[in-house]
Length: 459
Image (cartoon, rainbow, N blue to C red; front, side, top):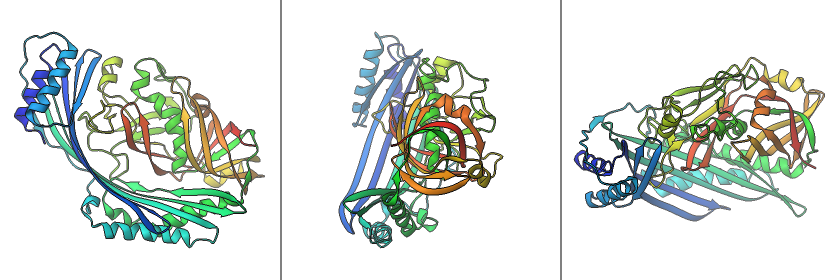
């Protein structure tokens, strides 16, 4: 991608005005996708993105520039622009790069970018057909199958010169149920850090039927009542609550500048004693996993909260300089046009001591959130608002009729303290997280949990 000698010269040029550290991040990424609606292929994409970003540090001051010209001349021009922004000319240092080979714990067997369009279309058609045939109320079905093959190179002034490859595949199904002039939707979107062998264990037809099932349930549901109540949040994508309401507040991007509700709380009890939360970028073939982060640091299993006590943050290189703490393999970016910052990988609440049936039985009147949707959060205050995409009332310890239009409202610090039961059916769901370094694939997860009290928005 970039020869070692060229990378050395580029780094030295970028350091020539006094930077104390310089990195190059280069990538060649190919993405293929097919989109289908009501059984017809609407569009197909085959995109390649290639370029490099150069970032210089002087203490905690940073300068970043990027270019799509990866010739020696193009890279040197980019490096000179970084150097000019950093300061005035000084002596040019010498840098010697040594290649580092890392293990690949996320192998891909069938590259999605190398498979014929017909095979990928057949997968999508099986998904959409199953959704459409699920029930006569299903009025529209759409879906996407996508695959990404991302090759990266990272070199820096500490002598690092290394490469990595990320392969990801995802199937997204959306269904609409209609009756009496009303429409309701449902969705399902599994993905993994692997190739099309994903579909050896994930049935496209089951994905389609799950999207249709959710849509039909919501079509028959009454509106959720509003108020403060006890809530049970199911496993898998239910973990988006922790990701958004608490996870972002544990990233060095916010903690390092004091813009987080969790800043300065290491060693303090911030959650219920049954809560252990982990960010783990080493899970083989998981959607959010990487061998190394986008700064070249090996990913790791990072215990954030243990038995309610805050143990660690997610720290990138800049955060490490600001906070005086080691990097945790958390520096991520969407592509070469972004500077990396601290981000989550696969973030989840671990299994707890409670039986799932006991959690439901313990709730006299409350809400069972089977599926969660998106939301918003302010990392400084922790205030959040999340949609419940599939919910049911709980009455006398039993799950009863479905409700729609529910949302969960509160703050991250409150919800952590109010998690008083944690089940044993840990599962993860796939998503895409947007922040200052762009959009990156992340897993969220948890077992069934109980939140003793939370504000539920509804009607």
